Amino acid sequence: MSKTKVTRRTTKMPLYEGIIVVTEIVDHLENSPTINKFDVECGLEYENGWDFVDGTVVMTSDGKTHIIFRRSAMRPGVVVHECFHALTRICKDLGIKYDPDNDEPMAYMLTWLVDEVYRTIAKDEKASK
Image 1 (cartoon, helix red, strand yellow):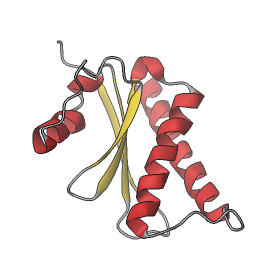
Image 2: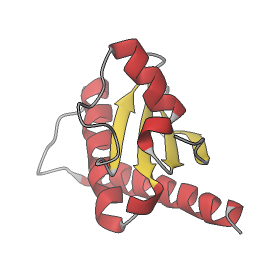
Image 3: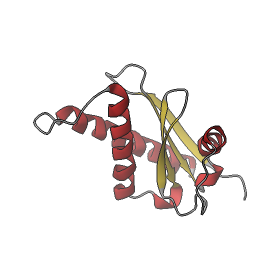
Image 4: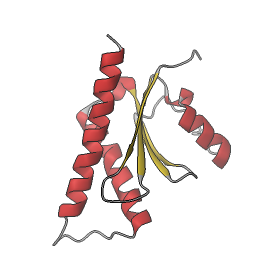
């Protein structure tokens, strides 16, 4: 497969020290440097390849949360779906438990994650012009 264009942004999550989020947009997930490294480190490969996957969240051994999307699948539902996965994994790592009587912190965190993805989409679109 030919080399894919990769757009990547790395950001520190506000208020939660040490949480680094990397958003990445690629043409084909199997060409993502993050996914390739993850596959090698964990011995994990999707049986049918990565082409059927719209996005994924990978927590790497360096403590970073990677939210990775296939460029052709960038639609709001997929963005929120993957950001929710990232949110739950980050909260688990931080020891934050869902509280339906006080869910505002998680709602703010989800908003921040979605905004980060859309900043990466803007960067990707600008680079394509």
